[in-house]
Length: 275
Figure 1 (spheres, rainbow, N blue to C red):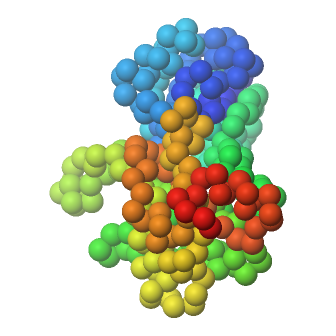
Figure 2 (tube, rainbow, N blue to C red):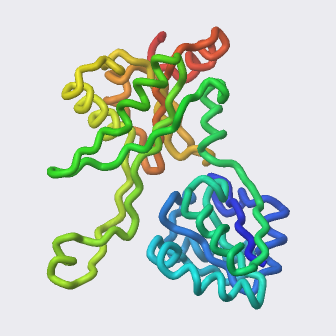
């Protein structure tokens, strides 16, 4: 059996009882470490917290292992129970869908144990989940690569009066292109996009496109460390949020569409000034 187990958003204690029972029954346990992270990251101290509570050794599975060497994990699941731990919900990333498909093709039984994810926990800000449109991802810009495909999706959502959840870039164990050109694999330090960086990039794209998908006065909600005890939620205009220090990762951003009176009342609880 391959168990794909959601860990939730906060720390090691957010696992469900059903998920914990499954982990403790497994012969081998992996935790993915590139689509998201718990409050303590994937440091040795963080792993020891997982291992102490779960009573199992936990192996960190980076993107390279999961995307290129998944067969090794699945071959273990042919002979014994294997747990694959995912921060948030198991299907918050397409990589994990691919893992299920590959497992099924090998005849491996799969059991999925769900948990909270950013896709539903963002409701804490008061915006109603059924009023969200397509979710977008915002990547880090570089000098030579400034993709803006998210712009049309935000524009379409706003034309329909829908809110847009923006997932911000996470770069963990990214290879250095400079060293790859020299035939060496050297990894860059981890990077986590802030709300502020995302807003600056959004304004840059608007300045180039000039189609008025949004402006400095557009209402947004910036969220940091969603699901943790120190989560931070701030509502305001893009211009307002640019000056807010949201602290450590992970961050996400919501561009607000048309709002109901109840949504407005909740947003005021998090507002820097009256919206």
